[in-house]
Image 1 (tube, rainbow, N blue to C red):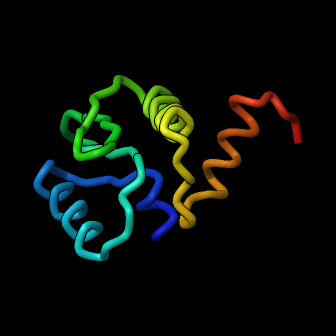
Image 2 (tube, rainbow, N blue to C red):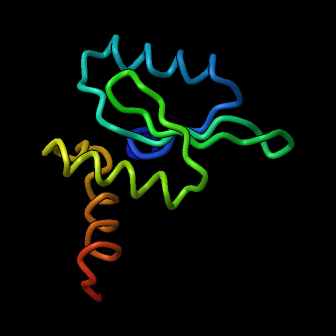
Image 3 (cartoon, rainbow, N blue to C red):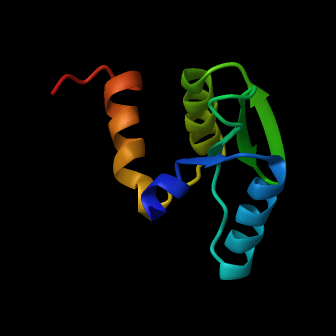
Amino acid sequence: KDSQDSFIVFGESVDVMQQHLEQLKNRGDPIQPFILIVGTIFSHIEILVYFDSIMYKVHSILRAIEVCYKIFHLFNLEYPCQSSIVWLFVQLLFWCNISI
């Protein structure tokens, strides 16, 4: 669950997302960029990238992954330890063209 929550967080409303962010702040862990998906299967879904207290709206999951990845590298941030394997997978397969 921790690795999922440091990569993509799902919630039914913005209020649920705010509660999740408060929990992260209360833990004292640094909040790295991550993807938020707000909505349900039966309602409109918003895809957001959270970074530095700002939520950037994007139009697809792939775009969200790309924006998040580029934020990590632009600001020379380390991947969160909980999801570092997922981010390394994304890095190797999508941006470095390394085949396995």
